[in-house]
Length: 616
Image (cartoon, rainbow, N blue to C red):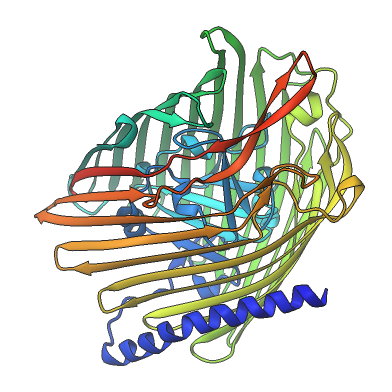
């Protein structure tokens, strides 16, 4: 325990020393100009309502439209890698299976929302991050910590919400992007948005294709293609009522060892919102998400079909009382599975009621939330959270919070033929967090310490509720806009430990304990130059910590040129020094000797991409 506290203190000290020159420069810069861009963005995921980052009393990271445009990522998870509290692992690059961990939780304990609609596979309990085209999204919000009281199952580690491109005023406003690069990669996208009267619209489409690269040493290139379409429409009536709809669909193919998959990822929803009284606004949303896969052997013989669909109805009411606010509502959802695998059950439903209060007694603030879920498959779960904030002065906010969450058993864990366990209980968690944020005109810093205890972890096969885990961590982040520089830094220390069974005391598989990310960009008239440095230490591929995966560090560079009105060109070079990046391992099984031989899943090496854009 003493050693861990010393490591934590050393991490805090190191970050403080590294940030000191930045702090001094930022304070000087803030005295020189009064209109410096604020780094206290408005976010909605943490509280179901628009709040600035320091008002949320949560650990949040916003990756805004400008960030996405500067970094121009090939894959969406390139943005998340190394962010505070976030770990990404994959079985190769360019459309290969990718998992995202928030605060040491596994991929099943991180919830993904697209414009408020949940997207994941009901059979696997995971989100297919690799199939989401970053060109379809305007910004991303990462909320770290349990949010089961707001979003229900699987928000143990946190929630990532992606926001699609919205409408622009007036118009129509077109945007077009064409690009390509290494591995015979081609990228095309186009969009049109605008407004007329009370109607707002946004349409977009993209296509991505690549021959890919080997995902194991000495292997063949593994290709990937993805075609995505997006439609958003909304109309506001004279009385303030509003109706709208969203549809996003991604369809494509990805190749892997010994086979390939045809996939579909889709979300769709309609909503209506009315101003009942001056203080009461009510919103009803009907939505559906789909995760579909047709899986083929190496000779393109169909081996399985697994399609999952979730339909939801959510009624949300927001009532304002001066500086205070109440959010209350109810939600009903139904999961369905269509598969060539004969599951014992192919549907389940969930009914929930929830409420959240936000009190502002400046300089004190209080947030409390409670949710009750009644699930047909695994019974009832009640989750809650309580957070307190204190504005120490005009620049510094102290926060502390306690929250619970749960992870629902998947269809595979409950109903897999012959091996599923319909008596499984949900995994449950408790998290205590203390944080402090410094918010200034041109820079910010944020520090958070937390501990999460997870009980009834589902493990083994056939699955059972047997394991426990304890996850401790420290997250430090900072950002600044100084003259023409845009800077962001993140340092994460995580201690994810199994606490029961034969692997007691071992690190949770495929998780690094230390990570660092630095993003630096500079605008010089019509030019922009920038880069990212991402580094992580080692991890283990297995629960017994016998298969060690080395850490890595990589540097990505980028440049942009606004060469004409409305026209720009961008170039990125990822992994400039061609370092080998491995975050997961596989194994080959010999049916003669009945032995397994492990191998590394390798990410792509150095890769260059050039694109030309109009209207962005």
